[in-house]
Image (cartoon, rainbow, N blue to C red; front, side, top):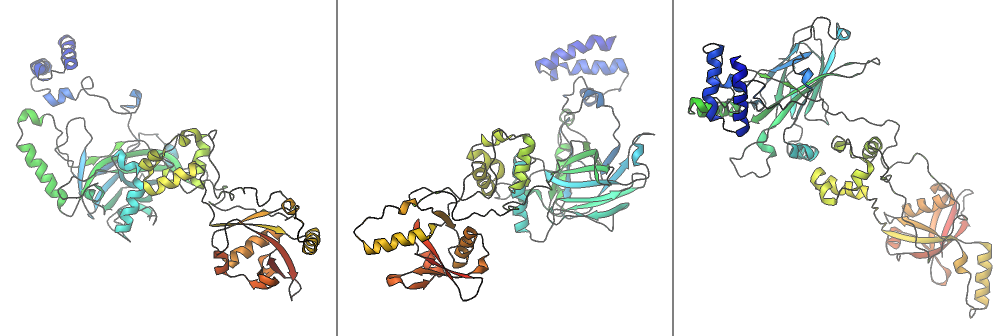
Length: 499
């Protein structure tokens, strides 16, 4: 009854923010419940005073998790109550993480006698760095070629099976283990927190990381994709011996504080318990989608089809990547990101539809993805294509055109009015080489490039000048040519003459 009478008073004081004024009331609670039963920190840790930050539903608060992971490194004493624990690690030192089976009797019977798969990651704690994780890791790879961010100390580890480290994922390792057997994995973190600070003038604070563990069981196809449990903790990594010095400094600072100030901080624990969290998003690749920039079928057309003229503005060359539409669903947007080589950012844009992505400004995309990939993604979203280095127009010479030219030679004063009625096709050149021109003309004729022996340009007095790379580089933009064919010495090849 005494507890019920004093509780409203405590609530009123809490709401007014005057914590110090009701210290005596809280000590009264402890006296009525028994001398020394509760300290100030114990009472403040009660659910009625604690600000709940967990995203789990209330029904799951007391649920016993199937697994528990324990990092054998002491937590910092300079962490305030209700804040997440912080653990200091030395660069390159092996730290044990115990993999404990916490299941109740009869819980998850489908994994009895079977292996599970755990994936370890070292990721950024700050959301600002999470947005640019790809760029940060690529910069680290560039500065530390051949090194990894996370490794397993295999000789010291116990109970792990088939440990793997993907060469392209420097911050990830994985292995199989049997929950029924003792399992301890020793990890080494090779990056330090100050390597990712924005300004490095000396004495700056390092950025915090997270160690996250995701555990999966086998599905019916024997693949470890069914999620069981995830947990993580916050760490900072120092140069060798630096974590010990930092731990000692925090401990000395806490010893200088008054007893009342110490009550606002957590005690230092010998080990770090990883707390439950959401699973790390996995990238789902679309196996049936074509590779970026590759079309499975090559379209060809005859020179007699289509319409156009030298005065007609040509259409831009076909895009290498497909365009994103406002009606694109979030699932289709994820596939579009994969096809266009933006797989790194699929986790950031998980719930973005085509309309959401198209609304992003250039500054938004650069801030999220970094300068290099941001500009590339923005141009892809807007469907911006790179203009070809050279555009020329070609038309196949016909018998009718030859007769008209002969008539013109006989009557030079008569204006030729039928030139624009012939069909021209645009050829877009990027490399400005004779080989490229040969391939483009062969595509127009729907023949193999090997069937074109030589390409000539008709010069003064009708001479034939062999086309070279240098000549193509000196072609005028949007120059017009009439293509004439001449049988080569071999039976199956032709000479092409540009008039």
